[in-house]
Structure formats: C-alpha cells, structure tokens
Amino acid sequence: MARTYRNQRREQIHIDITPLMDLTFMLLIIFIITVPAMEYSTDVTPPSMETPRTVEDVKNKAVVSLDKQGQIKLDNRIVPKGELVPALRQLGPEANLLIISDGSRRYEEVIEIHRLAYHAGVKNIFLVTQAEGKGK
Image 1 (cartoon, rainbow, N blue to C red):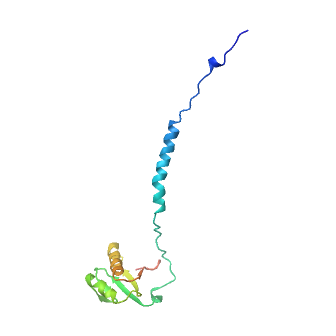
Image 2 (tube, rainbow, N blue to C red; image 1 turned 30 degrees about the horizontal axis):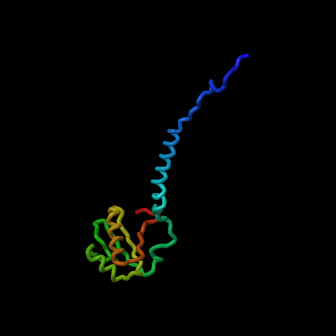
C-alpha cells in the first residue's frame, strides 16, 4: 500500500495585506484632515432676490447712493467718503440704511460703503436691487 503524507505536500497560502493597510492609512489621514474642516465651515448661502418688502415699506430709512461718477450721496446730498462715518453716526444705530449703487460701479466700492456704515454703528443695512424683469 502506498502512503501519501499530507504534511509533505502542504502548500503555504499567503495574502499580502500591504495594499490594504496603505489604503486604510490613506483613508484615515483623509478623514483626519477633512472632519475638522467640515465642523468649522461657514454657510455662504446668498440672499434671496425675492422679497415681499419694498423700499417704500421701510421705516426710519436713510439712503446712501453711489452714482456713475463715484459720488456718494446721503439722502440726496453729496458726502465725501471721509465724512460718511460721522454723517451716518448722526442717524443712530436703529436707522435702516439702504445702499443703492449704479450697476457700472465696482462691487468693492459698495462693500466699502457697507463697511463704513458698520463702523458708524448702523445695525440695519440693506442692499437695494432692481426687481427682475424691470429694465434700466
């Protein structure tokens, strides 16, 4: 009778887990980097262009306008940029400030007026836009 020895013919099976470990560590590093960024993110949802309020509905309002030439007007009187903060302080913190700008002016100029109004202590600042569908 012929004998066969199983122990002699045993094959060694190896699974190389190095690529799996590389993938695991790579995913771990990605999660370590992205999770704190997701916790401290800022919602930058733009405002809706549809509003039930109109300029006429706003009470205790003051209007700052920026025309094509870059002149700043506060309630239809020209105010130099350097004198805008003291003029806005006279309105008080409860005034509703409406900022109207000509479409040809740069957005940075509108933001600068907004910043000056903030430094003057005005709490309610509105950017006035033209309703869709209305021509210039």
